[in-house]
Length: 236
Image (cartoon, rainbow, N blue to C red; front, top):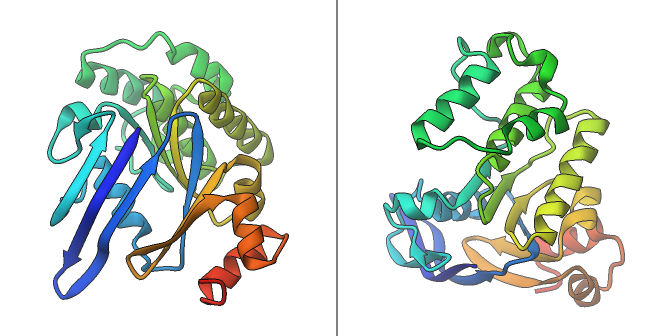
């Protein structure tokens, strides 16, 4: 489980997170949504330990996320656009990460096959398409079987087949009892994957509940329209 208690973060004069509290449960996929500058990225990076919060507490399976490598090792993170050393080949990158962790993953070859990366393993990352690089990122995300997954626009740049495979993998990890937190601007993706929605607005959590609850609250059956109504403040 991931829990946040009264978490605040300010950058200069801008208060980005304003004393928020939330729980992300095992076996559930929670979509974090909100307009630009609502605090989504800061929230996710705070859980990752990439942003140091000013106040409050973040626990990842009982471990503090504050400058704690034990907490960070429990999280698989798939950014919208991963930055890799362009001179490396995918297989070199994957082996390098395993060496850094001093851990060989028994999942490596199965994940390479699953995401159909075999033909691209020995090509420099700089010549690979954005979609192929996103597949490499997916392999890294699932490589060490982390109990928590944070996925930021995970299907960005993927073709329909790769996107379908990724969504199937996310749902499989949910069935295995993972904590999964994701963001996406693709409403059909949220409807397919998310169990609940956490809606951020100006650093506050103004709604957290199931898709059925957000539809009931807004009176809209289409998720895109329901979320738009929340963003406009007409259902708060």
